[in-house]
Image 1: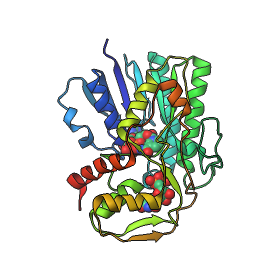
Image 2: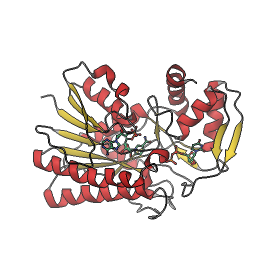
Image 3: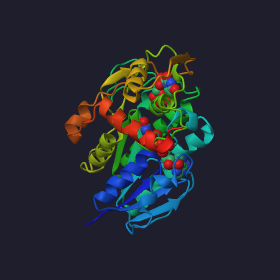
Length: 314
Ligand code: NAD
Ligand code: UDP
């Protein structure tokens, strides 16, 4: 039986790739989005498909629907520039959004997956980060609207699971990149590629010694679907990310090399609360999902550069 699947945030970067994959697998897909950071053009090629429906809605308000088998809850701005633009709404998207989507899942008996984040670990003192690490988040800092919103959403997921026996899955996603990243969202991969293609200065914040681990979007979507398909008693949280770790300086140099750019690398002040290092321990994903990323950074960057060359090369 083909499944009916609701994807909140489905017109965004990860959501639109997830919609593509679910449609390929024969699912009926309901894509819900308020279009804050998502774009209709990310899903426009599905608009004539009878298995696809696009719904404009903000998940901070309740939403009523029948006969959905699975809900992927991805709706929330994800880049620091966007989630800090209206921080109160960001917290509401995570917290009220989780309450509304969990309420929907409970009423219609759907399984529900939450797109949580490595940001629940804050600026981590343990490296790499296993799921058992409780995190070091500054609750009053400028990133807290995102980090604490996502932490509270996890709490709600586990309380609905314990109290209402809901089938829940929580994934903690680490930095993911690929085609359809928003050109203006300030994330490091899209920033560096666009700066390189336009011959502009490549802006490293701070010394560039902070690290991140970058996962290509196709691998991540595979991990999301594998998590949703686990047995009902597997809740996670499970880390999804690529354990290959790079400094931001190494990333800048790789982008310059792959684009053949003449852009100079410059330094700008480091934003407040910027985590110094981040790398997932993916032992649990390997064990429970038989999952690990297949795409090396260079390969993923080439595909992403190709996309930006075609679509946004200023
Ligand atoms: P994105 O900004 O491209 O996608 C988020 C989508 O949610 C957008 O389409 C946006 O319009 C929509 N949205 C935001 N608030 C909404 C609301 N209140 N109601 C309805 N729609 C709303 O970001 P993304 O990178 O695709 O991230 C998707 C999810 O994955 C987010 O929940 C994010 O926190 C999580 N995540 C992403 C990454 C990453 O590296 N991309 C890392 C960790 C976690
Ligand atoms: N960063 C940078 N230059 C940029 C954009 C980001 O040096 O033009 C740095 C940023 O300070 C952080 C890292 O790159 O240390 C990743 O930033 P991003 O916003 O992509 O994700 P997050 O900080 O949420 O991991």
